[in-house]
Image 1 (cartoon, helix red, strand yellow):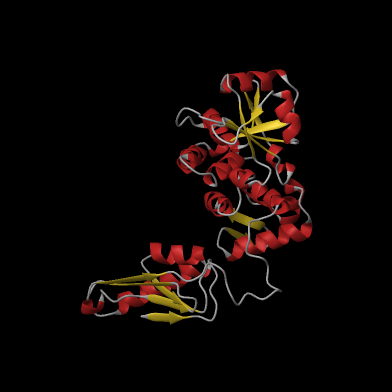
Image 2 (cartoon, rainbow, N blue to C red):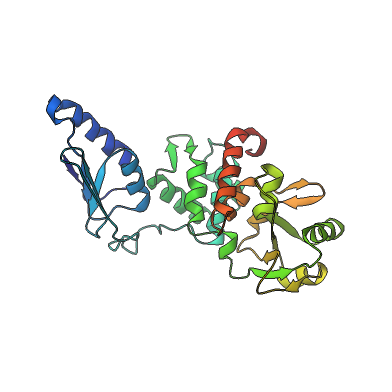
Length: 303
């Protein structure tokens, strides 16, 4: 069975899959193994993932393909492009990049709906134009839902963090600079407690205060000036063997809603999770452990 569409947004995937599922039930018993496939000029990554999870194949004109049948046994998969080649300049940008947009993402994760768009503007501190564009984009992606008279009625905050981390994260910061403290991480933490430096911890060290996962091997922190932080914390630049990574954020939203543990300022769980997901090594596993803690303890961190 093939469903052909001129265009498909992520939010359309569930309805299309449900429709194909209903059609399958109308087939005679010997046709229950029939495959289902959605065809369109372009299918974005999130839509493809959702279709695959629901057992629906897909094909688009860029070469993205998933075709699976039980009888005869068949599995075909190929990859085209993750960017829509026909997206016109007038359409909203499908990107999570940019410091200003980060303010909207953080507010959507940190504050529970419902909330009107004006309330979201106030909570995020972003401009009205940016906020509306982000909301419209996330609605098309099926990450949030709006309702008449209510505004933003539902947010899949876990999916938002995961999608955001594909293009954003501490490790991707162009200002991230590696340093070495020969006396170990404890010496750095002690100096932070005694100094009035503007900073916030993120990464593994921060996650450890919410949900311990494994011994911390390096400290990651946001500051307002890398040089000032290095001077006041007496850090040495270290291209290799670093145990302290310092970065200046694109937007000061990383400092918002920080919490204090043992005399240290720790970034909000939402910020720590996205930073870990976008980092190499074991960081994504630490992020998943933190996100599971966030799901179990939503009232402890979500306003």
